[in-house]
Amino acid sequence: MPKKIIILDRVGEPSDVAYRVAFWLTVPSTRYAFYVKPAGMNPDGSPIPFKSAWKDATEADNQDLRDGKVLEVIETYTLPAGVTLAQVQTFLQNKFTEKQDWLNSINPYVRYGSYWDGTSWTAGGVS
Image 1: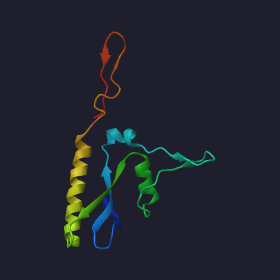
Image 2: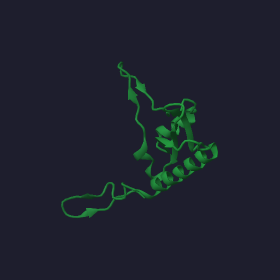
Image 3: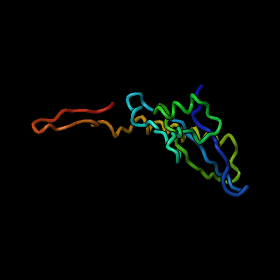
Image 4: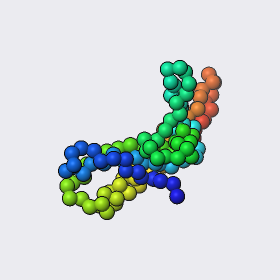
């Protein structure tokens, strides 16, 4: 089963309950092209492929991220002192659900490619 939430590290002082977290959101298939991660470039011009912030991501994981099938969102959360591991997990699951619902519902590409040819409009859009 693909990963959805990955705790990357604890940040701040040891008494703080702050975590940096990666969320792997599933991109709707009609929008993959808009989430593709292009390669960076080395000084010599050779490509540097995009990689997850999680060092243990597999090549298949990284390829899904590069192909726009998965969107990696990195955020940091500070929780109240004394919070239990179960509470952290529940909090993060709720955040994941909010983020996945947002990605599914927001569509800035609904009119993408619509154009006017000087006479009439042709509708475009991505569902």
